[in-house]
Picture (cartoon, rainbow, N blue to C red):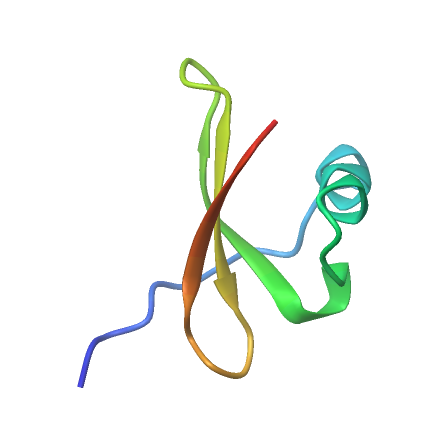
Length: 55
C-alpha cells in the first residue's frame, strides 16, 4: 500500500485556488506548494489520490 503524505489545511488563498479549479476545498489537503513552478500538489482526504493544479 502506498503511503499517503501528511497534508496541511489550505490557506485562504489556496482555498480560493481550489474553488477556481472546480474542487471542493473540504476534501483536499496541500502536500507541496511549488512556488517556482506555480503548482500546488494536493492529496484527497478520503481516497489518497494526488493531483497537481496550477496556482
